[in-house]
Length: 339
Image (cartoon, rainbow, N blue to C red):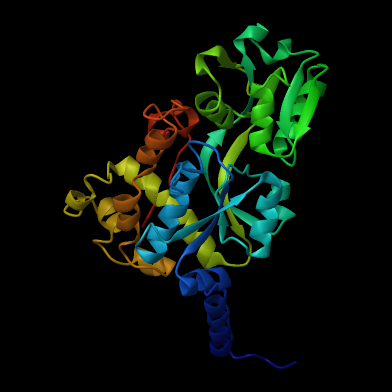
């Protein structure tokens, strides 16, 4: 048996590590000069174009933040509208570089589809939207009701589980398109609609004739951790997307906003100095400029700014932070240390 010298073996390990670090997706994105982002076909507050074609939403901000990290320019992103059925195949095939589209992080989606979820950017749960005329105050009062539900989603499976567990006769009306499912509910084809409560809030705010005539029932029947996804096999791209979101959380926690980020460059706090690239090294570790996080915050904002603007009290959806508050304020949002 041939013995490999320790120095040669170490060199092989380093070479292998370097090869793994230089990922195909990272290099491809860099070469074509923009990020292809898989987005929703139109969900107000999360991902939707306006009448002029300008995209906005919480998920959209994640894509813009990745572009700011990579290129120093949050506008270098192209949005590819994808239905629930199209989204995973589009990512698997390389049609998009990342998927930021109200997608729940589950075991099978990750392990069986060759994908990786980076970090939870919105903690959600499945609920029910009803007209107040129906006269119900609880999802457990929906026995015999017709329920609009989108096919190709975890929502459809959760609805069946909830009905079985509570011995309810729920009659699902399965519809492929999210927009068509919402329209069917509003037109009275179904007694209720079930989806993530964030989507129900968007429907109530943006599509019903009078939002005050509709209730989101109090029960949450599932955990829906919504996350950005990338393909397996490119650790460098995975790291960049993941740490982009953590930078938005860290900025909020440290009080760094799009409005004060320039003044914060003079902060004596070493955590802020590392975040903003005053102390160099963090960007190099990710393969980008040391101003990567500065560019995110300056051009997109921290997570709190994005939340408030798109889905919070300053938006049509008027959602509470709830579980999406920082861990220091009773929520689950916890960014990993940038050091």
